[in-house]
Image: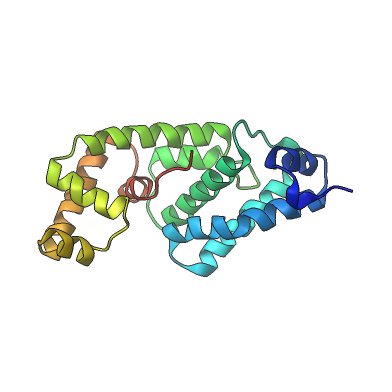
Length: 199
């Protein structure tokens, strides 16, 4: 009898793809809470995060025999959840042709294709380079928000500046990033910059 709790992800994935529901349940139990934490950083609303994570797992089960996971299962899950959070955030933002193309590439189940994840990764690389080109003080403020997830007030207190200065610096940073990247809306750029991808 298989001890699912002690089985590694690669084996669980293989069993799940073969239709083993207990293997799927083991994956669900292992990753549900970490994925919820990951998505909550983006959407901030528990019910929305829960819907996203549930949609991801439902999609994975429905499409299990067609899944193409080239790297670690954990990487696939976190990046898929992250992309689905992006879609949630962008629903109320006018989409550029770029976002529409990304949307068109998503499988019917809602899980992003490898091509979509590659597009997102390429965009992130451009954003990383653009962040390195920011003026020193602007980059420092932006990264305090991005990496340490500090509020405007916390950044202002730490650096001895006003909240309005922090707000302007982050707004200017976003404008510069959007100018350099060019084809993605501000909301998407800010989200990708603030919530780094899991590798």
